[in-house]
Structure formats: C-alpha cells, structure tokens
Amino acid sequence: VQTEQTDIDETKAAEEDFVYSVEENQVTITGYTGNLTELEVPKTIGGMTVVRIGSRAFENCKSLSEVTLPNTLTSSGDFLFSGCTKNI
Image (tube, rainbow, N blue to C red):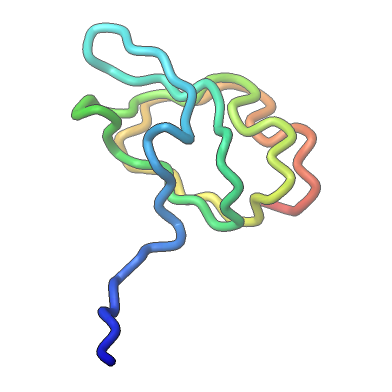
C-alpha cells in the first residue's frame, strides 16, 4: 500500500478562518476564527491584497503562539492580541 505524502503547511489558515472587510479591493482583517498555534497571515484573500489588520483582530485567540505578518500591511489597529494567553 502506498500512501501519498502531501506538503501541508500547518501555518496557513484557510481564507474562511479570517473575518475581513473589503474597501477599494483592499482587505482589512478584523478577526480570526481558526485554531492554529502558528499562523501566517496571507498577503492576499480572495485575490485582493491584505493591507490592514483591525483593532483586536486576534483578541482572545488562546491557541496562537506565533504570528507572521505579510509585508503588504500598511497599518494595524490597537490591541491586536488582547486576551491571548501566550506571548506573541
């Protein structure tokens, strides 16, 4: 029996794990509903560039221990990781 080995990136969240808004074809992430411990925020969602992360976007995400932000960000809100139990 052969098993197929796949390269699954455990830091890539599905687009549906992010709550976001779109203005002028640019994405602002306003929340995260996934449960990864290491998260890589994508550069694009739905083919549109992620440029902002809103205030409290990752609030109370108790599973997160590491977050990598894309170089496409132009701004972020306050208290992004408020209520998180791990040092990020």
